[in-house]
Image (cartoon, rainbow, N blue to C red; front, side):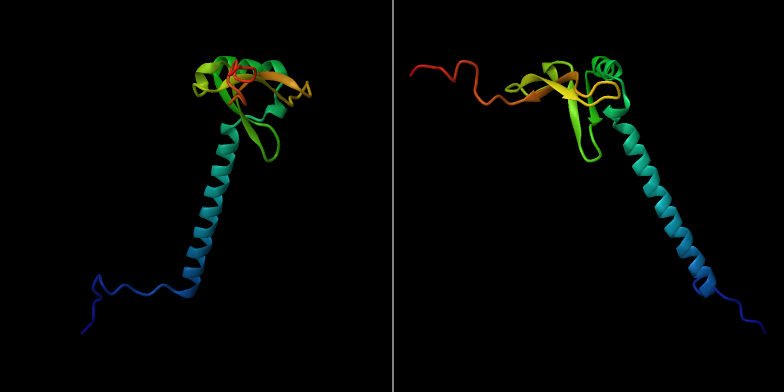
Amino acid sequence: MSIARTTSQAAPKSAPRRALTRRFGAAALLAAAALVSVTSAQARPDLRQLTCAKAQDMVRQNGHVVFTTSNTTYSLFVSNRSYCDPREVLRVQYGPTKDVAQCPVAYECVEPLFRPGELFERR
C-alpha cells in the first residue's frame, strides 16, 4: 500500500535549492534598486551637462524644472511668478552649465526679507 501526500504536506526544499532561491531574490532586489536609481537620475536633468541656452530653453518650455546642480544638490528653476507662493518674489538664479560657469538660467522664488516699502517706512 502506498502513501500519497496531501497538498498540505509539501516536500521540504533541499538546502541547495533554498540557497539558490535566496541568491535569486537578492539579485532581483539589487536589480530593482539599480533601476530605481537610474530612473530617478533621468527624472532630474543635470545642469552641468547642458549648455546655457538649452537649460534656459527647458525652463521656458516647461515653466519650471528641478535641475541637479552638483553631486549633492538640486534646485528649482522657474520661468515666472505663477510657480511661487503669493508672498515670494523672483530673483535671477545662476547655475553651472557646460559652457558658462554662472549661467543666468531662470528665476528662483524667494521670500523677501522686507516687504516693499517696509524698510524705510515712517511710523
